[in-house]
Amino acid sequence: MDQGILRKGAIIISTITLFFIIVPILHIFIKLSAKSLIATILDKTVWTSIFVSIGCSICATLLGCVMGIPFAYFLSKNRFRGRAILESVINLPVAIPHVAVGIALLSLFNDRTVVGSFFNLFHISFVDTVYGITIAMLFVSISFVISSALVGFDSIEQEIEMVSRTLGASSSYTFFHITFPLAFPSILRGAVLAFARSISEVGAILIIAYYPKTAPVLMYERFEEYGLSAARPVSALVIFLCVLIFFLLLYLSRHYARH
Amino acid sequence: MLDINISNKYKNGFSLGVSFCIKENSYNIMLGPSGSGKSLTLKAISGFEKIYGGYVRLKKRDISNLAPEKRNIVYLPQNLGLFPHLRVKEQLYFPFKARGISIDESIISMIVKEFNIVHLMERFPNELSGGEGQRVALARSLVARPDVLLLDEPLTGLDFHLKMKLIKFLKNIKNRFSLTIIHVTHDPIEAVYLGEEIFIIQDGRIIFSGALDQLWTCKANGFVQGIRQELKELGKIITTP
Image (cartoon, rainbow over all chains, first blue to last red; front, side, top):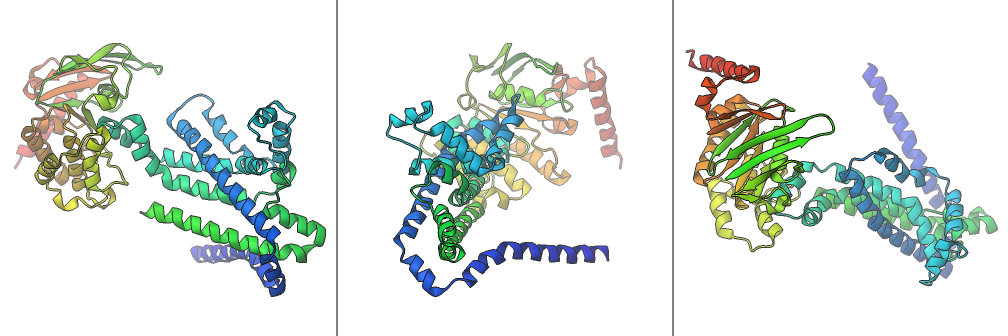
């Protein structure tokens, strides 16, 4: 009896949750007129912003992997005082409001600071450039890569690596042929989430690099200047592409994990 | 063949002080309760535990500071350490690839036949039964042609039937391939069946070393007496019609 009530309750709550996620997304498409959608598809500005978003998200995800995977490996294989604090620090970007992230990045990386001047030597400026967008995306998404990679590395039994070493494999051979392939499904999941987080970022980007406009910034701008009906077709197109890319990446990561 | 003299002290107060010799082509059982230092000794021999005082010598060569991959001592853990993402065939190729040498198909096919795993070559570890997994893991260890094979509780957790089958199998391959084996366990029965030389370890010290028959006659402390008593009682049960 009790179990039956629990089950029914869980089904009802699950349905409400599912509707809560799906309905707002579907609603945008329902309210969309074919004319405005075609106009958006033919709008060059929209496609430029989408390409900027996708390009910068890919760069941020790759950079996140390059920085995050070794860090996660180091954390997983070493026990030291302060490790728990480090693990909390990893998740800080998720907890900080993203406008504050933008302000923090702008104050550190603007051209007048030591860091900004250093990058200027290589003709890299972060204010209103793709570098600024990428660094903002990297900051808000790197936690996903590190956390997932950490879970992946932690799940590998130490004995497996020990066996590999005694069978004649060096520590680097063991890493690339045993540890990394075994942790790869987790890393890939983290990278997919990081990509999704990057492409959806707006708060930090608005502060550090309003230009070139990313798709979310363009949506925000159209909404601010022309209202809901002008923002809707861009949003619909971006949502459609994001969902497509997200499910494709998710499918690939699951496909790899299964095999 | 293998001379071990380790004197390590740890931050938690535990000290490992073991000194013993392993003869070539012998089956050695290291027997002791959990926390006695058995696995720590294996780790020190295989190169995963730093030796602060003492040495490990293999064929009179000091290998104390060599990396695990350079010692030619293969470690086989209780969970077998099969690589989940590699097929059996690839597990057997691994020692060759890891060392950057060409794959010797003749050795592999001889071992594969001997271990009766020909039909398992295309399978992944999760598609193997407990006994098949043990055979594959042992075959992979032998493909590496180790000077010493370290077995860390290889029979723990197996049902009686499989355990007895594997005991026979281990005895057989030890003789067939002239192996030098150090087998760590807490089960005196494994010592009775397999041990040509037995080392009893307690609180980080070897308190008995010798053949099984010497175990009955040696001066013994409480732990060794306990083992004797267990074995005697087991003997009574087995001989009772």
